Image (cartoon, rainbow, N blue to C red):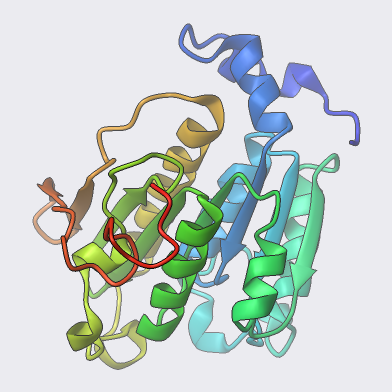
Length: 254
């Protein structure tokens, strides 16, 4: 592990519920960010600046001019470059001690299983339903905590799925295959800072998982209305017929 400048994180160390021990857990933590759009850019930036020691980032897109308003790691001169490469350089400039692996490809099930090995928490910042379902299933199999975020128009949401704890709901308890028509921001639009708001919330929840701080978002989804300036949390019920986490599912051990 590269040497971190501990003085850089003095404000974290000064937090009574975090302290030097909590910051040490952040520095030794390994987080995977899947999707480097508006959510992944903001989340990745705050994870790096907070001192996370290991990051795996994944995307397969090149930067487009329409990305620039909300994907805050990219500049006009980056248009046409791969998001993974520009993100890696930007995050290491923020935190030179960061060890980062950039995966510039669409990961299939086998590859996702391999790349989530030894990851402490996964952030799902993707924008398509099939990927979200696959990531949830792999994280459940790995018993890896999953933080899922989404943003569109003036709204966004964040949910924390503690696959490392027994009896917890998963993403498939919240959405089913019938929800495959969920809209995306390319067709519906999005206010740029809303994506950043959701990405920052995801980074906050990831740091809480790494340090063992309790979160009220376990078993709940946090919904943000940027137009009204309000938010609410809604409980997620564990589906007894969930195809991923139901107790009687073949291979289910807990």
